[in-house]
Length: 333
Image (cartoon, rainbow, N blue to C red; front, side, top):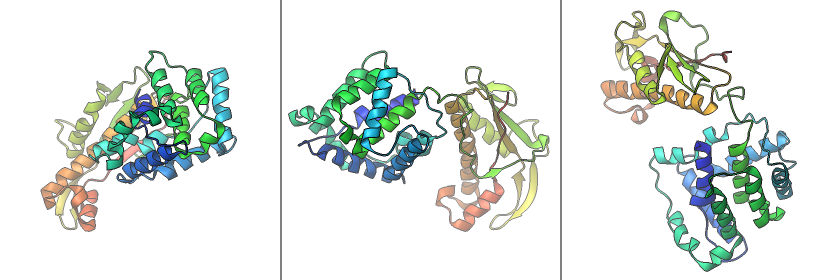
């Protein structure tokens, strides 16, 4: 559902304007969208190129040519099937709208003019306008089928149109969104950030398990909500848990801070092979958030600023005080 929302946002909510049949609209859209994501440090050209090259390497696309995109869509139109073994987590790398919203980055001025131009007659008669209309019609129905999406796209666009990056991006997102093999954790997972602990002392381990049973999450065998994971993990990192981890703190000497107690906690993230990839990523993000929040608290305590505002030496001190120890265990069962 999250991926579908992202796709619809691109196909509909961020549509472009046009004054002539010369890709003016698509060019203007792409430049504006690139500016939008660049504000969050995302190079949209590089991300789309990387995904396209991966599709070619995996033989999903025959080549980078627009004709290859068109043939792929015609194949989907005939079979209704999108089933490729793709080990690529593009949505999680790019993170699309979530990245922008979390950083409260405003829409560029060019985007604010789109709604007006979309209401004009030239736009509605343009290829870009017809493309948007066809997708609006498809996604307004209760049931969306792969072959219908592919057919409406092919009815509007020709092979040469897929030479344009705007249309390439939409088709790549369509494949990534509706790929029927993109389920479970048998696919490749992104690496855990920072330290990986391989030799775990059970006395210091907090186990977080993502189950295939309705994508439930267990923390030390207790079922919890995903949104509770970060708060629970923070309490264990800080040692604010009654009767837990009596040996989890070690007295150390940290530059700029002095003597202080360092948590010895290791968080072990485990999963069923059939567990949802999306749920796994959400839980992983919750654990990373827990460490980031604890570092912010300690940064405020010792330096009066949040971690991101500290200088390099201060950040080094906080990372030593609050090391991020996350262990990604082998898939269970």
